[in-house]
Length: 189
Figure 1 (cartoon, rainbow, N blue to C red):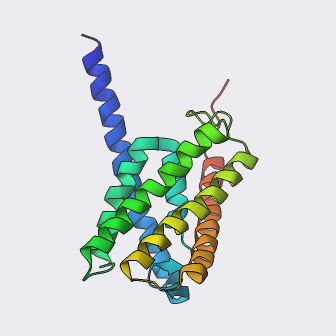
Figure 2: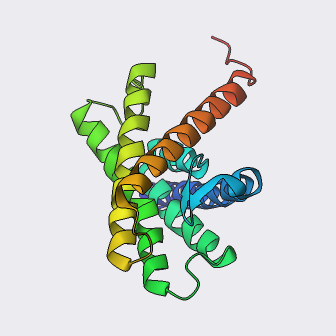
């Protein structure tokens, strides 16, 4: 009898995490468009990409629920901002990679860096390693997809710029979240 309320609570928590991730991703994409649109290298490749940080943080915090939220958020973003408007296959691949790449990096960090799911042993060094791993994983998958689809002929230059953009965006967002968390009162012991 006790399993049913626990299952409902867990489901609600996962749905809330996925919804929060989707909303956060969309908001940071909108902010990024407003602040950095004029500095884009080419369509879909930016020198600073704030949603990369949201992808990383939400995947680290919410794992699979974060991945689902990123898929929903990137789909909503692609529809709202008409990314690749005449190519739904490229758009679908973009959305899938946007959700899968941070999750793959997350799974690798769990095993390769001995990171616990609770993030109890997440040090600044491990966090920076996660950021670097993600800043290489996502651009590699996205650029391979873009080249295969004929969207971007600039593989190497695109890879460098997208990696820099994801790295800068991730660092900015991680430190923004760190600053916001520092404003919260510490629990009493």
